Image (cartoon, rainbow, N blue to C red; front, side, top):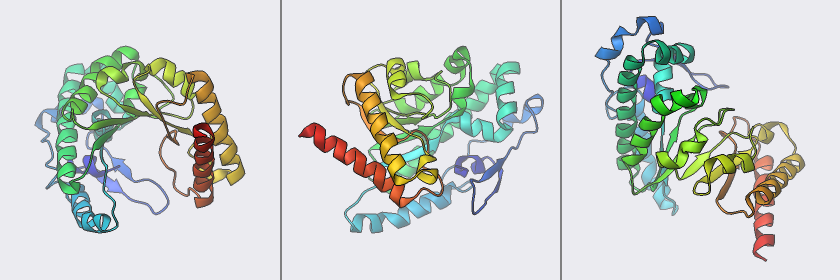
Amino acid sequence: MAAEASGFGCKLDFYSDNLPVVHPVFPSADEAEGVETLRIPNPRVNGLMPFVLSLQREARPHINAVGETVRMVCTRGPLTIGSYLFGVSEFLTLSMIDPDRMHKLLALTTTLCKQWLEAQLEAVGTAESIMVLDDICGMLSPDGYLEFAHPYIKDIFGQYPEMLHFFHNDMDTTVCVPHLAQAGVDVFNCTHKHSLSKIRKLAGNDIVLMGNLRPMSLVNDTPEMVSKRTRDLLREYEKGNGSRRKLLFSMGGGMPMGAGKAQIDAAYSTLSDWNRRSIG
């Protein structure tokens, strides 16, 4: 989560039981003059990114030795990276009080996204897809999304026309969903707080939906409860969608720390049984 922001000089705190904390480099949206002097980090040299690339290269022969390959590389999205530099509230404030400077910042972070993906594609050598993770675009108004998020996300995916394009946004809002296809998204990882049928209606029929099990159910629920949640989600999607087409069953968000193997196995087993019955 912190690799891209570290390239811009953000200080980081790491914890054994929680996600890293990224400290902004700008104190406020009113003190953003330094945006003009920011340099785009070199992912092969700056911050934690070279260490990630080294780990990818080191793991590659071991992964190949067991007959597996790395199929995807990922980047935090341009708005998420920008929000690390200012803090979320000040970043959103910047979009309102100084839109020109906001666009300058997003041009920098978008370029980093593309260069970071390119470096990872070279390091792993076998990827067939890219994922952009950007929750911050879900905090914008519809007009704000179209101005400050859509063109930059579209630009990143447009750089890799031969790849599958995954996009993650698990905010409670659906502001980005009607525009996913136009942005070049193939697979959308959405929040569990909206039904898959609702997301399908907003996204249209061309997008594969990736979700939609509540992530913390893998921590807090019994395997039996996870199995029931999985069946209920599959039934709801099939009923609302008219079929089970274009669903990649997964978490409606990220995999949580502390997820239990028994809970994961319960979801997998339920999905496998569901698919076997349908095929039969």
